[in-house]
Length: 181
Image (cartoon, rainbow, N blue to C red):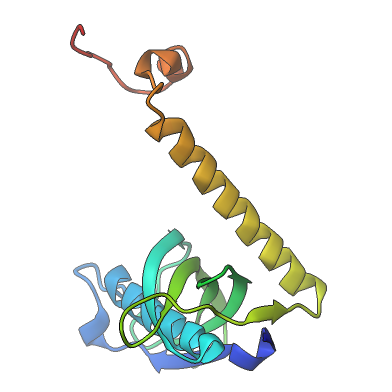
């Protein structure tokens, strides 16, 4: 079974209240992450037709602060599907209600896994990609997955040696004092 990306696309909007702010008066990043997790769950569940859990969150960059009184809109879509997992792309925008000015505040990628009621993984529908933007998002997800696998393989290898990286690290503001082994 295959589904279009549009069939599971979700958008939510919420007015930011003083109770959502941090000590500096900006909206707390943890509150935004909570909303992002909710929309990722909704989008993944809509696509898969079942309960989903968050497996990982990749690339959470807070680009612009969100102010109390702004209307935050989050847009989520399925960017990639594996066998039981999906990468949900989320874009966060904040709108100044009086001026209509919209700013991009965050883009993130949540990997969600579909589950049966007995908590075993469930296969998800494939994707029907029908425009260049959707294809680009799918390809970017593939590259992030490949990069993550390469990084894990490189640093989890039994042959890993920190000494192999010492020359590369000379330009960084670190002082390395490894014990003799």
